[in-house]
Image 1 (cartoon, rainbow, N blue to C red):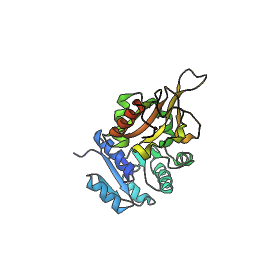
Image 2 (cartoon, helix red, strand yellow; image 1 turned 180 degrees about the vertical axis):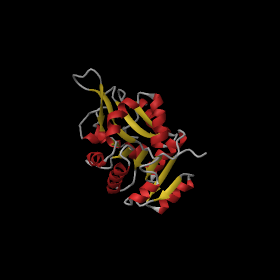
Image 3 (cartoon, rainbow, N blue to C red; image 1 turned 30 degrees about the vertical axis):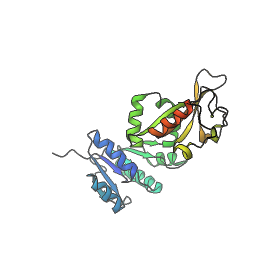
Image 4 (cartoon, rainbow, N blue to C red; image 1 turned 90 degrees about the vertical axis):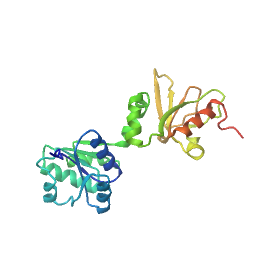
Amino acid sequence: MDVPKDILIFGCGNLGLEVAEQLRASGYAVRLAAADYSQVGYARAKDFDAVVVDVTDDEALRRLGLGDRVRVVFCLLEDEAQNLFLALSARALAPSVDILCVAESEGSEAKLKAAGASKVIDPYALSAMKIHELIRRPWILDTLESTLFGRESLDLAEVPVVEGSGLMGRELQELHLRESYNLILLGVVTREPDSEGDSMIYVNAGRSHRLETGDLLVIIGLRDEIERFRGEIQASAWGRPS
């Protein structure tokens, strides 16, 4: 007998498919829906039950099980206005359903909650608040790599600033690791004056910070590139004329 499809995911883009893959791997039966035939076809090619639906049509939403068997709804359409409308319609059709959304822009969290969302995830705020904590928990890192990055060879790592390195005295915003190593620099873990612990300074936060011995650069990239960069740091070779 088929497992009841009580989880409904609106959106067959990268995010919708990633959520569906993770739920399926955990044993849940899901159905995907979108207004775009090409996206639905791509989801079907991955052996998902996916349907084309007009999210503005309440009867079409009812036929998908809203107000009946559906217990959880993910609003992951690429259009923010459609997600707002969908959350509003889903809440009206099924007052007890759990509605999960992702904030796509500043201010959208309040709008989505007002429309009826049970939970709104801001991926940018989440990464900003949690990334320093996550990198110190290897078992979380494994999950982060497999779900967020989707590539076994991609790592999130800390690289120490060592005495004598070409990094010493550089401003954080002066580092352009993407150009030389194809690495993404998130920021630096450092000990702030008058602080009992470490803190994270994000490169896009606009704060000035001159690198010192003991600082830890937090980077994302291919493992080979991270190791190459780490090796040059340890050899005090980075940033010096060749």
